[in-house]
Length: 435
Image (tube, rainbow, N blue to C red; front, side, top):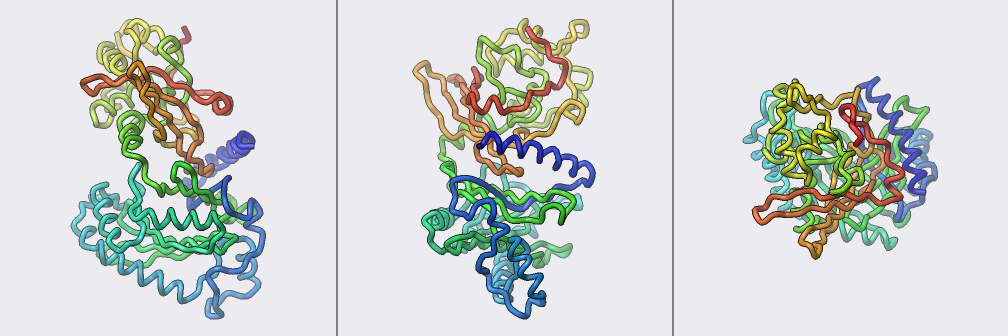
């Protein structure tokens, strides 16, 4: 069933991609699937008792209001709920206003604050007692136990609600009130932004029912909101959302940051193909190099500097530092210019890379096991928010050897057999040599 869903979503993905190219835009909101307390796939077409009671002052005709209720999106919001959300958002923005005013906002039109600033805002909002998180990769939700308790109550069929704050990269906030009525779950959103004078303004309100939701074993709250669908809209609206609630263990977090966070699943195949020390010819060494470079030197790979190729000694030294392979084998398997003594390199682009769900995923270590020979086997999940909303799109075991000096080598990767069959064929950055 899961495999069939992925194939269906694979088709949808390419529809989305075309829409992105044509319109330059793919909208996103909130999320998805199995192991949940919901009414199932028909939740958006089944009328339910309204959770946020509407009032006659809403100004919406009854027929329109009923139509929205049946579809599950753009549901009416009472004046009292709007007032409460506005007041609470204003108070929170006041709390972080000084942090925002002192922050380095750069010269760009679109403000993107540093992680340190976002964490300072998060820690300030934490003092209110409300759950709060940022979109910084692998960061923790503060006061998460309230959300954990809420979701567990929902699984037990208990009516419950919780308010969660999210800090955006521009320093604005989102306030989400999750409400479970014993049958369906709803999300009431409000947002606040900073204007040009660093003054807080309330942005928008939205109220939607969830199609499906689940609270995973790894601590992720996954859900899919009811959103407009074809033929009402001409482009697909992604209603999926993935929020980490329970924090990763210290060991898993440390292993994730050290071994996989800088790699990901895009531009190389170290984590998305089966290989070991005796079978290394299919690795994309030319694509992998820039990721290992950034991992080692903690700086962006200089694409202009290496447009004509990467010097032989430099390329081989870095590859051999992280992989158990000899120079002559690298020359055999990679795209190597014998005459110039350089390894070929080209940018990742539309002509040598096909966007995929896996490529948008983020690797996360969910288990670490120390083997008798001193190596570690890391169980890694690919966390995918886009459309699929899956905290384990694929699961694979990555074997690493850690040296006494803290250095390490990757020794092999193994993907679960049933998931390996579902993966699209890897597209090499350059023509691939097969030994």
